[in-house]
Length: 503
Ligand SMILES: Cc1cc2nc3c(=O)[nH]c(=O)nc-3n(C[C@H](O)[C@H](O)[C@H](O)COP(=O)(O)OP(=O)(O)OC[C@H]3O[C@@H](n4cnc5c(N)ncnc54)[C@H](O)[C@@H]3O)c2cc1C
Image (cartoon, rainbow, N blue to C red; front, side):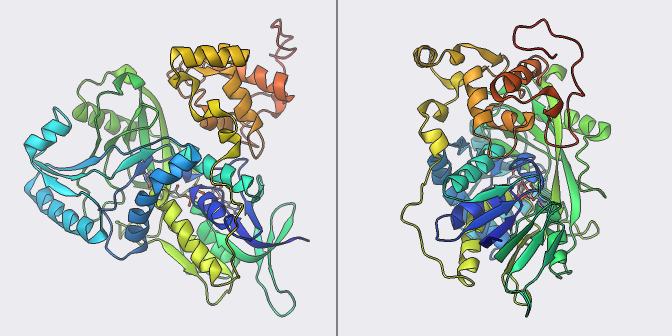
């Protein structure tokens, strides 16, 4: 059996960032993930905000990794060709009590080293976002936005290009820790056993369970759901920067806010609701109603047809419901289980903090194993960088660029997703570069097909045909996101369409 230097459990943004950072060294690395792809957990279901770091107590892991991660994010995204924008953010006070809380946030932000942070008055607020309500605000110019799933995929692709192995559809069920008889950890999944000198527990909502498998039972996670509405791109010019309320001391999130996405949609959310089942990503009528009202309040030009989709993400909170607020991220190398590194309770701002957490993981691994930096580390993503057109979406190209692409590859002349203007060439490339099995969600996160107004109503059938024609994936094995999410049970009737025999 191969003995890996490090096995990472979880291919979310934290596991993939750790994998890419460790891939800069001599170590052999395996990532084990229960889903069929990267980023199917919390990492694809959040606001996509690169936070500045004003909200967390100075000196905590959250504060330190937030500010450092924010500093690192722009270069990282540029290396990996991931869309990133430094939008800035205002946190707005409406009452006298909130104005006092702003002063505390300002001091906290300064102590955390947040660059450019300042209090602004109504006049300046109005300049930044005409029509805004509220009395005073904190402005943080370093706040930004990133595509959370593209970042996660890019980190994984970069790690993979540098020799990291991935095992998808493998759930870690139990762990044997080293003892007198055996020198290494054994991780058991349904079908395999893997051996490792070091384990990095980056299992998100499953991280307390993974710790328990190694005999560490002091952590409990409390799932807390955040629901969102996605707004049509029609409104993309409506918001110049991010607008947040002042959170209360015991709030479990940062309050319902409006957030631009790098793709031109606006998100309203997230709500805060402790739930029992950490897989329950349902959206609920009551909260959708609240979000609609809130949306109309913050953006009066909203119409009911602008709400195109809803989704929910679940925070892995260490703070129980009766306590509320936030506890610090657990980033630790266990003394009692030597070689076991825990990353637990990585809720917001985990996306922002991911490159900084990865740096800390490298440091902790360096205390356990001899590390040598590799000279042949590939910074970018060969899969993207060797295919220049992939650096830019077809829909973002100029007319002349589009003409050139079509003349080089006629598949660019065939639009599959009309809402987002995604071409056959982009779909085929996305399916070909999937590290794990091909799923519709995997293609969606790599291309944005099915993410527009019609949400796949028109292009799903075309995608089905393309997967069968180009990759031989038959309808009965096509899934939305892995086993249990099959979209078809088999052929309905003989097809008259020229692309194939099933429909
Ligand atoms: C509503 C909401 C809004 C947020 N907004 C922001 C924001 O704007 N900015 C920001 O910086 N952060 C934000 N966050 C936080 C951020 O999304 C998370 O901190 C980050 O995505 C955590 O990544 P992760 O890799 O730890 O978790 P995940 O992405 O969930 O990855 C963990 C992986 O482990 C796998 N796994 C679990 N158990 C096992 C097992 N037994 N075997 C194998 N694999 C397993 C899971 O399938 C999963 O893929 C938000 C979070 C939520 C919920």
